[in-house]
Image (cartoon, rainbow, N blue to C red):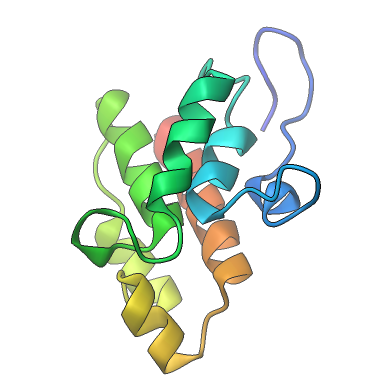
Length: 120
């Protein structure tokens, strides 16, 4: 996706996931990936540290929680069902228990769903 203001190509969220020195979690990685496009502050990205590792509301996958939050703020529809179909569940605990989708894959899925959701 191209940043309309600068013409730069957006760096995908998964490139930030658990990379030193920031070591961003799944929720933070989504915000970081859309930082420029949605004008997300570094302090907001820091706030989302609380939502990784199964700590998001209702046990949601943190990446999914971040996507749902951003889509809601933009007045866009939920992608819960699409994420469930692609990742095998929506909660962190169930996704990890099923062991079919890694956390990195969840970030990639969430990034794509957010990009598509913002463009619809």
